Amino acid sequence: MAATVKTYMAKPGEVEQKWCVVDAADKVVGRLASDIAMILMGKHRPTYTPHVDTGDYVVVINAEKVVFSGNKWEKKEYNWYTGYHGLRKETAGKRLQRRPELILYDAVRRMLPKNYLARKMLRKLKIYVGPDHPHQAQQPELRELGVK
Image (cartoon, rainbow, N blue to C red):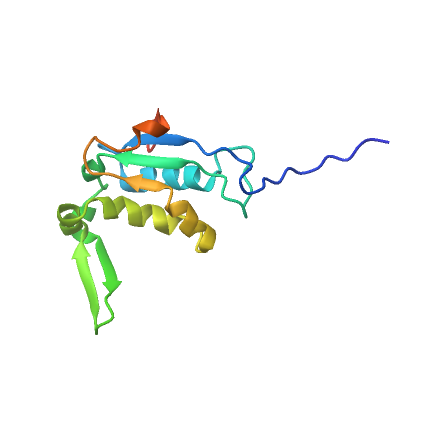
């Protein structure tokens, strides 16, 4: 009689989380955000478990140099509610001037599941404007994401 094969389920704290650095210069926002979301969720690992945070930390540099395809800098609008009547709106071009890291942050946030675990995953995303970041002590490895 053959032994049954058990499905591996990762347990919290059992998976070693690594650090990686991604250069966002001249990368399309959607392609880069989907690759970052996969790493944050841990779907790049064979030990992926949906109810456990098995993803890695991601440090993004040069967030102000991301690009949109087409004419989305003028057409794409971001809306949010402040608590007062009406919505606040701004185009992607205005947001790039005001807070460029929010463009990539919102794209990644919307690609993650909508639950408590996703909020934990989002805390592992570090986005910086410019080429410098304060995470050299974690010895992150450079990854090329967002390419066709």
